[in-house]
Amino acid sequence: MRLAVDAMGGDNAPKEIVLGAMDAVTEINNLTITLYGDENQINPFLTNNKNIEVIHTDEVITSDDEPVRAVRRKKNSSLVLMAQAVKEGLADACISAGNTGALMSAGLFVVGRIPGIDRPALSPTLPTVDGKGFLMLDVGANVDAKANHLVQYAIMGSIYSEKVRHISNPTVGLLNVGTEDGKGNELTKKAFEQLKSAPINFIGNVEARDILNSACDVVVTDGFSGNIALKTIEGTAQAIFALLKGTLMSSTKTKLAAGLMKNDLRGLKEKLDYSEYGGAGLFGLAAPVIKAHGSSNSRAILSAIKQANHMVEHNVTETIKTTIDSIELDKE
Image (cartoon, rainbow, N blue to C red; front, side, top):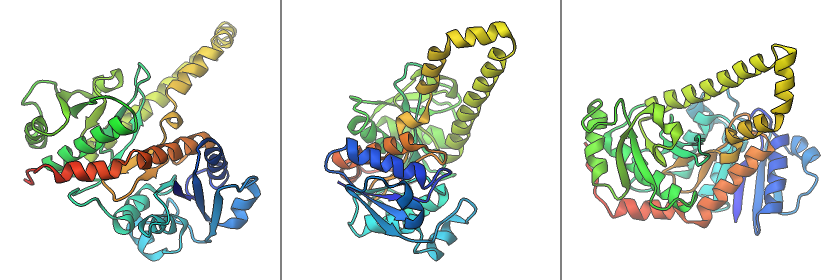
């Protein structure tokens, strides 16, 4: 297994990227990682280079760069060289915590799409109350979508949930303004009809208020709605923890209570920790491409590497291709 990793992407690069990579080659058998980035910044943290290679580049795509222009102009950047390695067969998959738009552009223009997939989807796994989690796609790769795109998202999400998350016959729901048949706008009504005949376990419409309570294993929506839902979930979680912290620190009595609840609160935080779920997969590309969270620590990078490793081991890309080839989708 060969993975390419952008060592310069993310808020905590390259330290946390390097630490995560070293943990990964220790935990995962037969794994080789190539780190792309400035070796002068990488090497001080690389205390064990077994099964880790460094490809030097001093060009970096930052969060301020315009994605498409950066990918075209900064061809020697760590992110582009990482994607190029996948295209050339030097790596089986790639991971970056850097500029999301640039990674999507590199995925499209360098790695390329699976034949038959019109648009890739950005797909994170989000926590649920019962700890099971669910996959949501798309959360921003494409602001606009047609009904057949949502069907493709559903198929890709179902395959990933079964092959990587080991969920037998995963349930798929369409994010909508109500659970009744016939609800929604023109897009969701048309997608609903097409999803009923798709090779998935489609359970119908689901509402946003239910998705954190395990309404289904895969939630399908367009990138505009999905990104709003994702940011709302993230913002709500941050606000709740801030309110809880403020309340527990408000008096001596509540501080004592917080001390008694310390382990329970830590467990709750870990249950909602994005790092347990890895990164967001860019589904629909010719090879696995994983977008790790921009503030990823070494643990999150390790999870993202494991995620990419599972996708390669379980032939997720080839299974998606075979499934898409076997069905006909309405392109309207």
